[in-house]
Image 1 (tube, protein in one colour):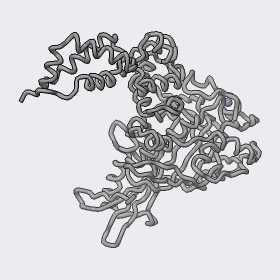
Image 2 (cartoon, protein in one colour):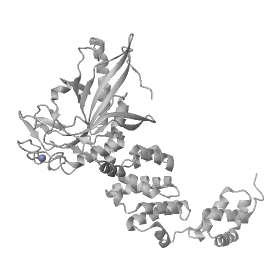
Image 3 (tube, protein in one colour):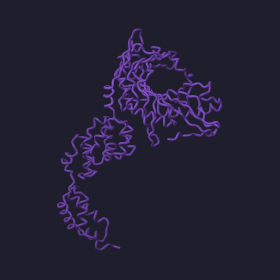
Length: 501
Ligand SMILES: [Zn+2]
C-alpha cells in the first residue's frame, strides 16, 4: 500500500504523516496487578486500596498471574517473541497520582515484535509492533469545580495494564483509527479487556510527525506525543490537527527532527477546542532512573504453560470475517455485525454448520432473532431459539417443506415455546402437500367447477391460471405446493388454443 501524500492548499507543500501508537489496555481480572484489592471501575474513592497499592513502607507486592496470561495471549496472537525470563522495573517519577513515586513496569518486555493485521481501504496490512509490556496503572486526580483543593483517588492505582507499542508505520488518521479498532476487537475477543475508551480501559497516545518534500529532498519534523484521546474520532482529529500544526511550525522555524534544537514534546488533545495543547518537553529515558524492582522475583515462564494458552487461541475477528465472507457468502456488513461479539459469532457458526443456506441463517439471525434479543434485553446465549433450532427452521424453508410466510409463524411459536421447528410444523399442520395424485384430483375439480376460467385461459387471459391456482389453494387449505399445482394445471390444460390477438 502506497504511503498517502497530502498537499497543503496554502503553501502547496507536499507531505506524509507518520504515526506510531502506544496503547494502554486495562486487563480484566479479579484483583489488581500486585495486590489483592478488587480491580473494577469507579466506586467510592479510595475504597479499594491497601498498604501495597498505597505504597506504605514494608508492603510487599505479589504478581497477578492473570497479567501474564493476558500479555502472553496477546503476544501469541500477534506472533511476538515471548520473553521466558521476566523481571519488573521501577520507573521513577514524582506525580501525586502515583503513590509510590515510581511505577512498576518492564524494561525487558514480555513480548517483542509481532504485528497486528488490519484491513484498511479493502487491503490487509500488517502493522509491525515494537513490543508489549506489563505494568500498573496510576491513581486519579479529582478536581472539584469551585474548590481550591486537589483530591486523589487511588482505586485505579495498581490496575493491571498492558502497553502495546506499534512501529511508526501508519500514515493517515483513518489508518491509525482502524489499527486501534482492530486492537480493541482483538483484546475483547481474547477476554482480556472490555476495551471501553470512555472509562479509560483502552487509552492511546499517538506519536506524530511529518515528512515534507523540499527542494533538497524529504525532511522530517520533530515528533510530538499526543495524549488524552478518548475516542476514535478524537484520535483522528488530533492527528489531523498535529499535521497542520507541524506543517505551519516548520514553515516558521525550519527545525527538523535531526536538528540539535529539535525537542520531542508531549501534548494533550482538547476535544472542545479541537486542538492539541503543549504539556511538557519530553525528557530522555534516563530521567526515569529505571532500576530493577527488588521486591518481585524473576518470573520464569515455561513452554507447557504457553502451549496451554496456545490451545485457547482462535482466529482474530478479522480472520473470522474473511471466512464468513468467503465460505458462507455473507456481505462485509453482516460479517462485521456477527463478529462484533464473540457470543454472537459462536452462535452463528453453530447455526450455520451444515445449513443448506448459511446466508439465509445469517439473515434470519440478524433481521429477526437479534431484534427479539434486543427487545427482551437478554444475550444471544440466552436466546429461546438455540442455534440448531434456527438452522432447522431455515432448512425447512429451503427444502420447501414450509413457505417463508409460514416460517414466520413457526418462528413466533418457537420463541414462545422453545420447541423445535419440525415439531411445530407437525403440530400446526403446516407441512406443504406435495402429493401429485391428491393435487391432480384438485386440479380436475377446479377445471370442472370453473369452465369460464378454462375458456379465458385458452384465450390467453393472464389471470386465469392464477385464479385457478387460488381456487386449488382454497381446497388444500393453503398447503398444496404451488409449483406442483402449477405444473399439473399446465399439463391438464394443454397448449393455449385460441389466443386473442
Ligand atoms: Zn491494593
